[in-house]
Image (tube, rainbow, N blue to C red):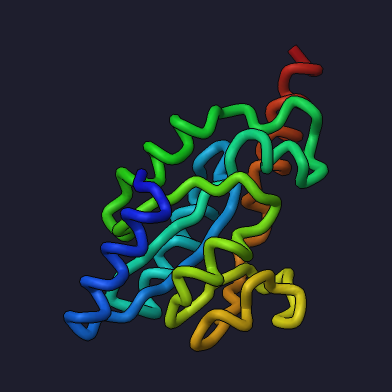
Length: 154
């Protein structure tokens, strides 16, 4: 995980080397195959992949269950940073990475296809926006619901 300043320094070096940058973001609460799919797709659009991870505070502001996130921000960022398709991870404390994107200005901004392009925060700072399909039935919310159903049966 890096600070915004370290991210911008790396981005400058990458651009000097004519490398492109893809950016995607999320809470990544309980890492699962759907997350991996999204990150692999994001990485396919550019030479470098930057992932913004919502802080615990900003994740709670997104209107998910009151006990979310389940996994703390340090552990979530460490898991994302350990993935080979990810070059850098940056934590952000706002509900969206709008401010971060206004400084990074990635070549490609990648979001899930549940969004419309006009709903994607920070789209005006990216060279282009790519909407990717998610793997149906794979989300942290669905995974937690399945765990709760299993607990209720036991």
